[in-house]
Image (cartoon, rainbow, N blue to C red):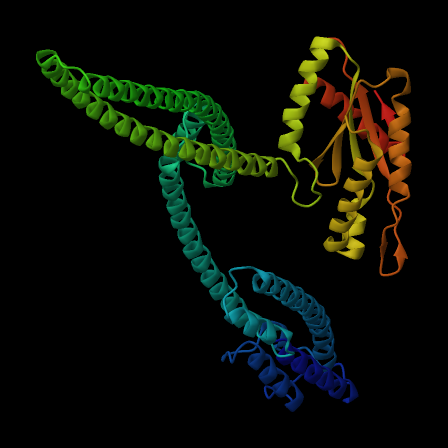
Length: 501
């Protein structure tokens, strides 16, 4: 359209030049009924401009009887001005439309729901002969395809969320926990059944993971207590069993000795009776001797059964000893695994779970004895820059060095744990309140001396520390919040410093 309009304007300018070169007619001269050839060509071009319309020319180009060439020139100049202005505005509109179509298509192409036609459409819009009306319809088709793809994916996502809810419910049914953990799991199960917003699913999954970890920790703790009790019971049983076995063996030996003694005495009596002449007495005594011999045989059989029982008791005693050793080994393994639950995998110091338990213990001790207790939060300054400049492997290496440096700088009675990310918690118990800054300043200076290098570049590590002493009326939460506020001040007042609240 713009090309055709520009062509018409060029042709009109040529015709205007032709008309201006004609002689000016006399005042009394009028146009004949036959229109001059330039005017005829002008009318034909005008009709072509308006999509091949037939019929009379527009009134602006129909010459009046009293008009001359000057009238045609005047009208033509006026129309050319309008056409040039319209051409300029149409060109601007086309440029704006082209840019908007191109931007819209580019955004569609970059989306997750872009159909394959978007690439071809963008190529066409980059071309010089793009027909915007045609491209607009293509763009609408692309948006319809993207909308269909979006709807399809949304349907698939909804189906996936439904399947996830079902799997989580089945998982909750299979978890063998009891008590408070079971109650919390049932709450999550009810929430899954009544869930309307699928965006809440990730939060419920995290709660389920935390409850599962806590349930495993409680089960492990209960197993440790059970094994300890079992080990104690086995020890007591082994002790009493060993005493009973010892007494049984002593009794067996005593009975054997007395049996031999009785048998010897009976043999002596028999030999003495053989030398006597009283026949009736000898017969009666021999009869009693045979009865006593039968009793001795029965006594020997009972001794054999007692010996067999003692042998079985001895074997059982060996089994109890073996079971006790296995129970003790299992207890040690379980204790070691339990310790691993409280160790941070990266830094190999205590993690946040261990910190919570130790903090509770130290808090109870502080309540009972009122010995000064300090809690400090340490955060590495600009640690994100280390990860961004040197990579996460370098950042991990730095965290391990920092953790070891903190441990070496503290007393054995102090406690340090990785609180999260590049933040550490430190407990200083029985510390002098007036000199609380001294060990923390020593620690801060030690961190700056860490010989950390990456790609032959020396990297200086600094830390901000916020600390506080437990005060009357404090609990663990209030003390931690006060230390956290002190750390916030340290970081926003220049970093690499200690604030004690």
